[in-house]
Image (cartoon, rainbow over all chains, first blue to last red; front, side, top):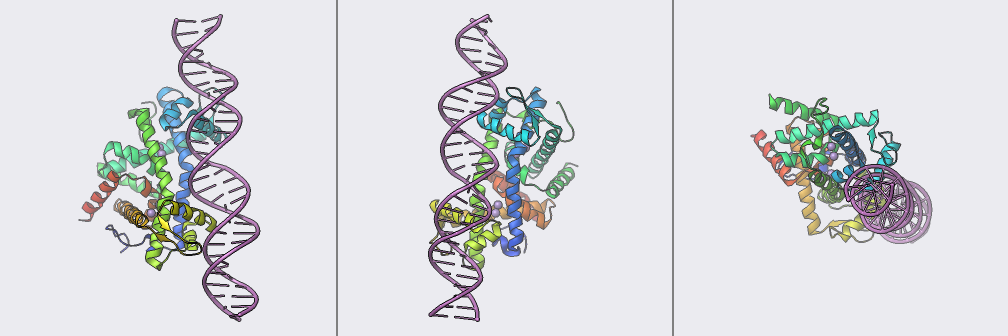
Amino acid sequence: MSSDPKGGGAVSAHMTPDKQASHFKRAREARESEIIEDYVELIADLIDEHGEARAVDIGKRLGVTGATVNKMIARLKMMDLVNAEPYRSIFLTDEGRKMAEASRARHHIVVALLRAVGVDEATAWADAEGMEHCCSPETLAAFAEFVKKQGS
Amino acid sequence: MSSDPKGGGAVSAHMTPDKQASHFKRAREARESEIIEDYVELIADLIDEHGEARAVDIGKRLGVTGATVNKMIARLKMMDLVNAEPYRSIFLTDEGRKMAEASRARHHIVVALLRAVGVDEATAWADAEGMEHCCSPETLAAFAEFVKKQGS
DNA sequence: CCAAAAGTTTAGCCTTGGCTAAAAATACTA
DNA sequence: TAGTATTTTTAGCCAAGGCTAAACTTTTGG
Ligand SMILES: [Mn+2]
Ligand SMILES: [Mn+2]
Ligand SMILES: [Mn+2]
Ligand SMILES: [Mn+2]
């Protein structure tokens, strides 16, 4: 009745307008933090791989221009997620590093879950890039649990 | 490699900048279509449940104002996804109905997958609202396959 | 050591998707 | 049927996150 995998009727059949609105609001909030998290996680990756994060490399890996990166770094700086001086490379604050580690962990859990249910490696990494930002802690916990059981 | 706190190192360790950029681009494209798909799917739900879709109900269920709904409907109309006359209720074009059915199907598959790996009903519906837009056809196929096997 | 290349910053533009406030149209009800 | 309530529309505002072009700084190599 509830989760009828084979198609079925309107999503909202068993949901009040208010509850549904809260779901959409959560999705909108996820969209807001998505870009921030991707930048911070990517900066951590670059630092850990190359010892530093330069704007030009951030741009290359995100597929955006240097100007876009620059504007975003200014925002991250105001949010106290990074330290950055003009014409120098970018560093994470403690808070930024914490967010990066959390994002990275989520990212890996989502990839692992996708792999565990039969998604191929390349697709898993691609799809996880978006999905990671929409998973509640409860869902991530369920994913981790499922992957652990599967692996044993 | 560098730091291996708990779930592996940098995401990009086994990925070229170009490939990673393509993932981020796909995620940005998903963000673009997400709102469109949510509107169209919701309009289909309202029509199927109540015989018609009024702007005020769309707003209530999305958690946005009537003005926002109005502006969006104008866009959907220009995209030939809906038909709408001033002060009348909103109808789906054939193309809109097709998109709605596809979105609804994806939505149900994602919920079913979440349920299958141990996520509770309420959380599954909430998280699926965002995740549904990030899944490639390959991933959705894998989800459907996994759910089917699980069920049998 | 200096010119060219590479990287960074600034300025200004655009679309999206929210919002409020107020006007206009429609629907309800006394 | 008149007056009120609801709904829809318009107008104008805002922040986010893209872009290009051009100026500026740093790095590099001859
Ligand atoms: Mn990530
Ligand atoms: Mn991501
Ligand atoms: Mn949906
Ligand atoms: Mn959705």
